[in-house]
Length: 493
Image (cartoon, rainbow, N blue to C red; front, side, top):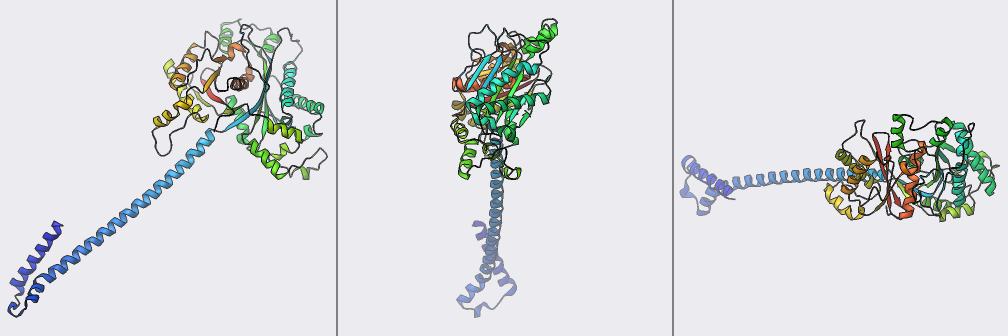
């Protein structure tokens, strides 16, 4: 304001000087209004025009700045919305899970020196141990050795939930068994059960899908890949079986015959064997069953022409053959636990130091907590990650009740368990890795290719028993580690 007034005074002074010194009109003939107007009119007009122009220019600059800021804010909001959408999509992928409705074990060789049962049993979890008095015939093959156990676990699952007989079977067999023999054996066992149970004729022929389980490095990611690859798959029966004990009996090999074999035995355990079966269902199975009921169900038998049967697609392809009793029991069956995605890392061939190992485990546990909905990650709005972690501390603390691991024999597992204990403590998980844990290496021995799924089955059984989360730590070789949580069925997601 002062600057503008000074400008007006200077302009008026210059005009008055020009008027008196250069123009020199006859002021004697001017009236008083003419004198005032002549001296002040032009300066006021020029000054007012300048002020008006400057104000218009300032308004244009402010409007342009406001528009630029509004466009930047809109772009920022759009970018934030896109980041938020990607964040939730990524979180949804991370928290993808499947449900388990039944677990069965057979022919497990449990260490006799422990009084506590290897696997806590209930109506949905069954376990039968291998009789040590059984002998192995030299001309017997591995599939014949494990076939009784396969028949037992499949019959146990099917008796508890007959609808599982219509779902595909995924197997993880030993390397010695040919694929054709394994698939034929499993198909025969299922067909025998369907025939003995008097289920719908033609079910075994209509749905005879027996496939190999995809290998994803650990059991949790392997079974989740089934439902990720086929979102319409309502459920599956997963089988794993192997017997290093049978190999030792046939070959007559002594595990302590060399220092190398003795060292391997300390990491993997004594020779064992076992058959594990998991009945897994899609997390959206209740919605699928509700849609099936609302759309109406058409049943087909073996004599139905293929052009009519091909009309049944998606979920109904597995559920349309089931009778009302089987569908009713499937609807009434309860979810035992939920399997969440694993977080894994390869620490390299160089064995890391204890604290370095613990920090790596701590990062894996944190990621596994996020994937199991035990911890909320930092939001796209830029919230401090420490505040998000502090808000979840109460949720995380005390939620994990048991640990399943294969860290090795007692004289080899110390470094791994010490690092794991430090990582659990730093993540706020009050869990004793010795007292509240099952070391499958010590309790069940070397299960070969069946170890991974057996560990998952044990974790599921412990969740049913403790009603709390169970952490599974699966060591693969000398450098790889996979950690994942198995959650109780009532956990809100």
